[in-house]
Image 1: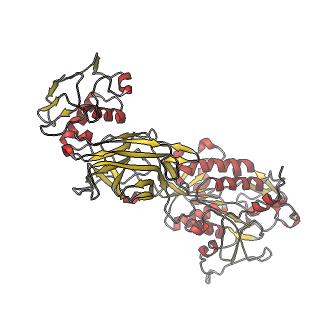
Image 2 (image 1 turned 90 degrees about the horizontal axis):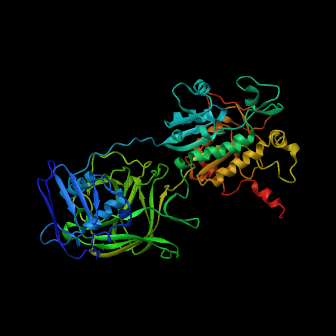
Image 3 (image 1 turned 120 degrees about the horizontal axis):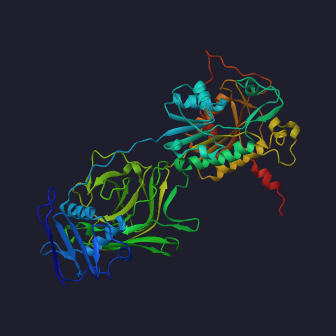
Length: 601
C-alpha cells in the first residue's frame, strides 16, 4: 500500500512539508505496522488527540490532518536519497520520551529536519568547595574554623545551638542546625556542595563536682577531676552519631575507589537504561544497538557492547547510545571525572553528559581516542565542552556535576565546529564497554578528618597495667564505655570507603601551639598536646596524601609537669606537618593487639 501525507504549518515552520511513504524494504527489514511496532507502544493507550482505529492512527489539530495507514518501509524525503526508516525514528522517540504528545512529536520532527535550535539552557548554581566542621563550638572545632577562614576557605558549621555558635564564631558564620545523634535533623540540603568534613564532635565529659560555664576545669587538661558523662551517651554520640554523619556526607565527599555508574562491582551488575539514538532522527540510515555479553569482559565477566553500522547516506554519519533520563540525577560533585573501561578499536568516540532533562539540549562533551585492546580512559570533568548539534556553545552555563541526568556514547563523522573525526570509517564497528565510574584525581588526600582520642584500643588490651594509663582508659566502664564506642566510630570511618585521616591526640590542653611533637601509631603513647596544635594538624592533613587513610596518635614532648609557653616576640617556627605524615604507615591502628589476643572459638 502506498500513502501520502501532506500538511501546512504556520511560521516559524516551512510553509509546506511533504513526505511520501512508499513501499520498499526497511533497513531493519520490517514494516511499520501493528506487528512491527514496539510492544509497549501497542499496549499503551495513545494520548489525545490521537485516535486509534483498527490499523490506522489519525491525528487532527487545527489546519493539520494526518492519516497514517499500515505501510511498507521507509520514508523517501528526497529523490535519490536512501530510504529513511520512519518506524525506527518513531521507536527512538518513544523509547526516550514515552508516548509522545502530538505537538511535541511534530515539533521535534520539523525542527530536526530544518535544523532549528532549541531554547536556551537554564544556568546552574555552583555550590562546590564547602568545608563542613562538625563540633565547631568545641575547643578543637572552633580553632579549625578559625584556621580555615584565615586560609580563605568557604566554611559551614553543623551545630546544635545557633545562639551558642554565633556567640563563639561570630554572626557571619554559615551554619546549619542539626544533631548527629538524630538522623532526621541531618537534612540533605545542609551537605550540598560539601567537599571536606572535619568532625570534632565528641561526647561531653565533665567533673562530677561541676564546672564553669566555659568548662574551664575540663579544658585545662592537666589537673584531674573525677569525671562523668554529661548529656548524650558515648554510644549515641561516638557510634550512632558517627553512622548518621557518614551516611549524610558520603554522597558529597565521595569514595576513594570512585562511584560506579555502569558495570560490575561486588559480584553484581549495575545496568543503565541505554537506547539507540542514531542519525535516523535527522534523516540518516546509520543503526546501532547496545547488548550485554555476560562473558565478554576483560577477565571473562560481563560487559556491554556498543555496536552497529554507520553510514553517511542522507547527510548522516553518526550512531550513539544514550540513557533515558535518570529518575534521580547523579550527584558527582565529589569526583573529578569519568573513567571508561573499554576495548578499543583505534577509533575516536565521544562521551556526552547532560545536566538537563530536555530532549534536545546542550551536552557536555569530550572526544577520546582508543587503541586496540582493553584500556581505561579517564575524562576529567574539566575537559568537557558545551556542545549543541556539533557546535560549541560559548555562553553555556558551567557544567553542574551534582546534577547528571543522562549519558551518551557516540561514534560520529563529525567533531565540533565544522571539524571531522580523523578516524571515522563507514561500516560496522564494535566497542565493548565494561564499566563507567566516577573517579577522584591522584594524589588523593583526606576528605573526612576525625578527632578521636589516644587510648581507644587499650581498655580490652591484655597485659596492660591500667594504673599507668590515662583516666579514660582506667574508667572506660564507669564512663559508659567511652573509648569502646570511640573505637567503633573509628571503624565506621575506616570501612566507609571515604578518604580519611583519624587523629588521636593525647590529653588536650589550652596551651599554645609550637612545642615539638611526637607522632606515633599503634595506640601506645601518653602525654599532652595543645588544642591549637591539633587543629593545625587536622587542617594540614587534608592537604597531604601521606595522611590519607592513616590513623595516628600525637603528643608534644613537654611533660605534664612542665607548662608550655610561647614568647610572642619570638614565636616558634611553623611546622611542616607533611614531614610527620610521611612517617605514617597504612593499616596500623592498635587493634592488632586485640586481634592477636583473640581466642578462636
